[in-house]
Length: 281
Image (cartoon, rainbow, N blue to C red; front, side):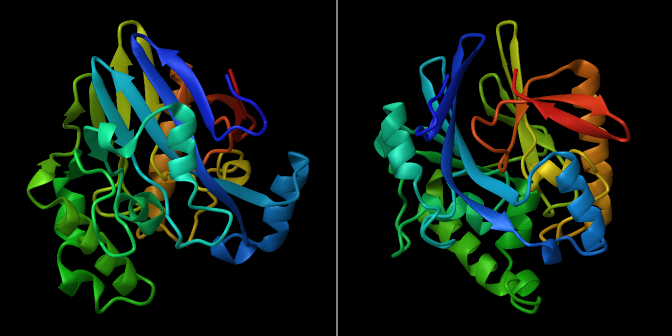
């Protein structure tokens, strides 16, 4: 499925070919988890025999029914030298930017949409239709809702509006739960941003769920879903959404992925005490 040096991991989901593209990686500090004592964080990490709070930045390439769909596009050059490798991952997957016909943003945070435009604000994917949920668009397109907010929201708002402007008449707004492309449906996951969501791919007998950013730090937030992260605009709602989603995934035994899971980023959730354990099937 993948090699240690690879930036891609591919699985067949029904008739669809799905490739996780690893744009880059970083590590979080405990200060990004307000309300969780540092000793609790250390205990959760120790129980899993890991030292760092590691996270990846992922995009997902779907080739299905003659369409090439890219979900999210990474942070480009905004998050330092360990990120910004989406072009290399796409090259490894054998897909050029001009082949992408549908571009979906799970939400408009910079680590998901900066890679959709160049540093000068031009569209990276010249033939793509950009799909965004109506609620997410309504928030980020309104400068009054971001410019008066604490940093870094004003900068993030300007970037989001630059992305929306770059795709201009190739922007398509959908309702929460609406169709992104045939067989691919958006899935509202409240709490992270006003219109944040994931998606569900159904192809033949195959299914794959994308949890968006409802989990940022897999080693912490799967084992203890109560642990919230500072990036959530409504941490309490995101916490409830995370618990519900993990419970549903574990009950269904569903294959899932997300924006920040570690390579190769295809998982199933297994109940483990009061939390969950992520396993690579």
